Image (cartoon, rainbow, N blue to C red; front, side):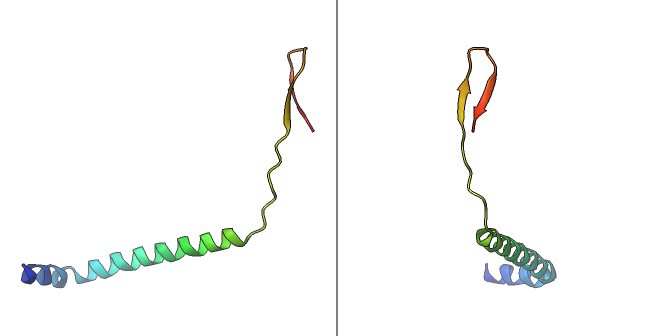
Length: 62
């Protein structure tokens, strides 16, 4: 069983290394984007009160 695994790894060594490299770069890109997004200043959301008038039109109270 172990010999089959070693043969598989030896036969596909280049593909395995390429796959691991792509996964590593993907994780690093996600982590850097996540860290950058957490450090950015974002305006706080403000919700306005919804008012329904007798005329049937909708407007927002500011």
